[in-house]
Image (cartoon, rainbow, N blue to C red; front, side, top):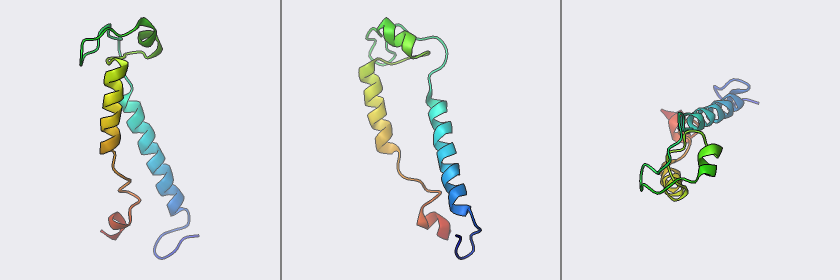
Length: 88
């Protein structure tokens, strides 16, 4: 059910687009290439099991955890679906 000026299915299209954006962002962050033997941040040795499990790994577990925390703080919210973005 659509209301106002939106067509039927507009909300689902918005949800689908948000999910697709999130998937593309996650894929773009996947490491590529050859795994490093030492962390590029702190130079700690990256265990061989981690190198094999994550192709193209560049960070040790500690540095990756810190990076993940920082990225989570900066993620914000979905502007596409926010009320203020629809009013502009």
